Length: 493
Image (cartoon, rainbow, N blue to C red):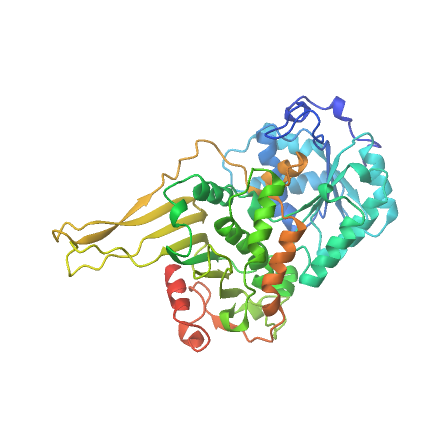
């Protein structure tokens, strides 16, 4: 059972949401924070793995002072929803659960069961939201029902105050992304739409921009005159546990390369935005991605880990890629001449998200000992699971008078003195505050699909690789790719 109307904003506990100013760049005239949250697909895997723990994180910092309506097709009730949410937070691995924060989450949950194509469901939700003028609607549902949910929400009495939070993937190719954009914008203004790419909420990715633009020591050499290549790695040790139905239809190229990896490329390569506003940041992202030369068959390797087809639910003839390696270039004055690569895969030997910036040949002054060949400088940026920056330099060798030896300067892992929110907690909080800077704008999404489009429909036979390895056997790919592939795979070890 549920009440006919949720508490109005004036009846909620006091907290950050009641302040006139809600953060940098917001004023009394800025759009109000959302005062209710509707989660479509609350019974799914994403909710259990990410959403409930994100809500708990927000409650711990007093940023969860709104009612939460969970919508699903499963035969649950509010008690069942609260039980599952409790189990999900407990299973997240934190040793000392903040019971008050957990209770805050559970007490605010209400479950509504219904079919996504039933108009009565949306009338019920509108009635339940009552006087809440701004409602954040999160679509954690399969893409096949996006238009159904969006179309019905647009016809409700609360449509003018809805902020639409759309989970990835936003389309599955250029045509479908453009079609979905047209469908959404015909019903909701762009300022009410937030397309999710949870990499944009990661503190580490935002730090890449600070690292680039706030350090004079890097700025003069951040171009093809000094940088030979940039390698981006997204490696996971897990396979497709719990994601068979979704993953086998999309593969690694669509799942992480088209969105996450290319957002890393944009952060590394774009020009400095004029301000920190969402429009200026997204302008730079779109400009940069428009200059990325589309992927080609000769520069792309698809892999699939041995045993993938034995996973329950995976077709025995599946050609789905669980591994991608691609090299590409950026056609602009800053980066013309630098080689870029992306390596992304599942069931590899470790989990890591990293960037390696390889500078050109090292300087070798005349006074350096003739038997020494200085190593190239490199910058290694660890984005996950541990965030760190390593700069590899040359120093004097202790064994040769004027010889060289490599030394590494590493940031302190604890250089941020506060506990960070996980990406999904930041996602909810930013959308609630109407901060678009941490979301993908439609033109950015369309450019990313343009880049991967030439290799999306290739009739390829993925190269097999062992679970727990560094990827496909180099010997099997040597005829397809240059020696640079071996160098990238070696860097993963």
